Length: 172
Image (cartoon, rainbow, N blue to C red; front, side, top):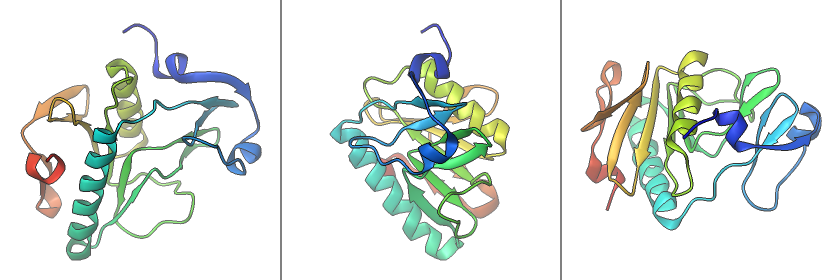
């Protein structure tokens, strides 16, 4: 598990920010780092189901808590860095291309993901200002928070809102 997220995931196709923002990809959307497209790993059905369950849970909770959850949304972290979390949760509706940190950013592990690469991406979210950067492992049925590193937790919480995501909310 050596190497950084950018080194591991980057495909060497240099394009401008404007070209990136106006490109639709046939399969998974790509992330963008300093002129290079960054491919994402292909999710399996368990990843997709977990993403759907979590998304639905957060949308329903968001009606009461006044949160705005979305999936697979490009976010502008810096002028030449655009990442796509599996799920992002904001305190209010966002423009088509959010450029402020969400309250929560969630990555869901896929079988081909490298833990070090995903951890670095979560740490980048945290450094950007995301208060709650979470990792969900649907195959291991585990939750992790990311502050200074990954910490396994029994539930994912946003204490200031009284929000708690339990395993039964994310896994069948």
